[in-house]
Each structure stands twice: as C-alpha cells, then as structure tokens.
Length: 207
Length: 146
Figure (tube, chains in turn cyan, brown):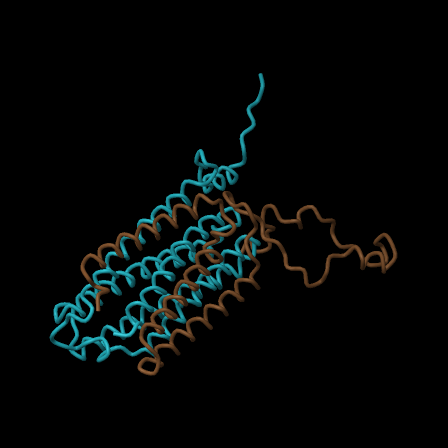
C-alpha cells in the first residue's frame, strides 16, 4: 500500500500564513487593503471638505491663527514622515531575513507614531486651554473631528505595529510573513500621506 | 532568537558555495578579483507575490526620505512668506509640494512602482474619485468664490 507523504508540522503552519491568490494573481489580503485605502480616500476627503467649507465662517474665536503653533506641528509632521522610512526599512529587513533589524525598525516606527500622537494630545490640550473645544465654533468642530480621526488611524497603526513587533520578538515573524509586514506598511504609509494633505490644507495654506 | 541567522527564501546565498581559504580557490588572484561582484553593489531584495519588479534598496529609501524632508522644510518656509508673496502663489507651491510628497510616498514606500498595475489603478481610482467629488461639492457651495 502506498504511503501518503505528510509534510512536517512546521511547514503546514508556515504555509497557513500565505494568503491565497485571487484570479488576478495577487493576494486577497493585499487587494483588500488597497480597496480599503481607496475607500478611505473618500472618508478623509469628506472631513477635509467639511473643514474647507466651514473655514473662515466661525464668528466667535479662537480662530486658526490664534492657536496654531506651526513650528511644533512641523516637527511632529517630520517625525511621522520619518516613521514611513523606518517602516520600509522594516519591510526590507524581513525580506532579507535580518530579524534583528526588523525588530529595531518596527519598534522605531511604533515609537515615532506614539511621539506623533503625544504631540497631537499636547496640541489638543493647548488649544483647549486657549478656549477652543469641539463645540466652541465651526473651526473647533471640523478641526478636532478631522485631526482626531487621523489620530485614531495612527493609534490603530501603532497597535498593529506593536503586535507585529511582539511576534517578531517571539520569532514568529519570518521572511515567509513579509507580506504581513508589507500590508501593515501600506496602512502606515497611507496615514502618512493623509497627514501630508492635512498638514498642507489645514495648517499651512493661508487663512 | 532561533531564526536569527536564517536565510530568507529566494536569496542567492542558498546556492552559493561556502567561502574557501584564498589559496584553495581556483584561478589566480586577479581572475578571482575580476569574477567577484563589485564591493559596493546593492543587494537585490527578493520579490513578494504580485510584484513585477524588485523593491528599491534601503539606500534609495533614505534618499526618498531626504527629498521628503527638504520638501517639508520648503513648505514650512513658504508659510512664513505669507504677506510678502501673493497668497495664490503660496497656495500653488504648497499644493505642488504636497502632491510631490504624496506621489513619492505612494510610489516608492507603498511600492506602487513595483507592484502589479491593478493596485495602482484601484488607489488612483479612489484618489481621483475623492478629489473630483469634493471639488464638485465645494465648487457648488461657492467655497472657492472670492
């Protein structure tokens, strides 16, 4: 009687990480992430448009020029941009099988993201002390909702990165899981490009 | 870590012979030096499923980051020119820098340059749909009227 070859247990576990390809020859997970990001453009577009629509219509202050601290926000924007660099370096590291650098870059990305969020919390607190709140005026409503939603996206990304870092520390993230890091990276870079737009439109364009 | 030194699947190191002492390798020293890859050659990363070209090297990623930093610094500099330069010009340059940064991150860091075109089409569809839709809405609501 012929014996059926059974693959070693660890191969079965590793194979389970691979996502099935669609009929287009691309992975379902990656395609789903790109579709999500595509729809998220419309989501953020709605809130940026609401900010632009109500811009300059707030009667009682504070107004943007009263509260914005451009040097501070420039630094936090720079930190978020640099987190995109560390994210791609993490992907390059896992693809090379360099797991020490993978852990370093994943943790650096999460820490940069946490620093950005810390800056946002500080900024919100300062604005509140200067009298701007969610229900103070139209500027407060649209500003806090738009930047707060972006901050929520960044926070979700940090949780994702920390969980990947935890897996990497335990040695459960190998070169075969590169796509998992790439998909987390896609999400992370997307929140970065959304901030590029928000920083320009909300903070820098003359009021 | 158990897998610390593991070779990534698909890298060239799996098929290369182990280094032997110099006096045991075939050929003269000059022949070996000519056959050896250049010392500064950038290692090519293996490709992931759905990619048509290999990812850029880490050095290229750092170069893109440097461009992003310069563009951000230019944007912040423009902000401080408000009042000295017409607002229209400042807005045009700010939007131009934002588009450059957006495209650089999407094409290099999100690998739209190296992935199958289907991903680029989906993303461009979302971006163009969002810009078109909200431009029409804001124009209809006279947001851009003086």
